[in-house]
Image (cartoon, rainbow, N blue to C red; front, side, top):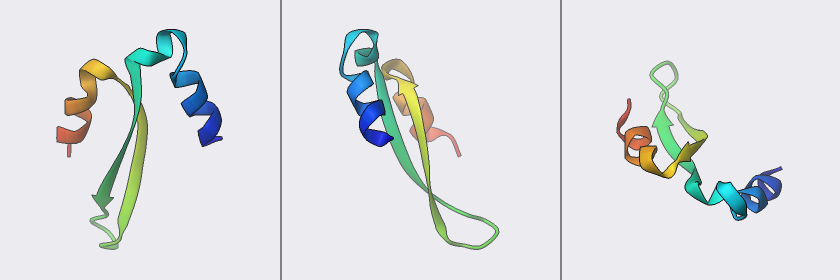
Length: 51
């Protein structure tokens, strides 16, 4: 599934979007989880700065 997302991001209007992966510590268990989201290139810093 990830390959399909990456392939569509490389063509056409998809070049203005990026797949961002952030590691977040769970407050409940203390374990780290990965938060993945497809974000417009203008909002990448906002994605990484949010808690």
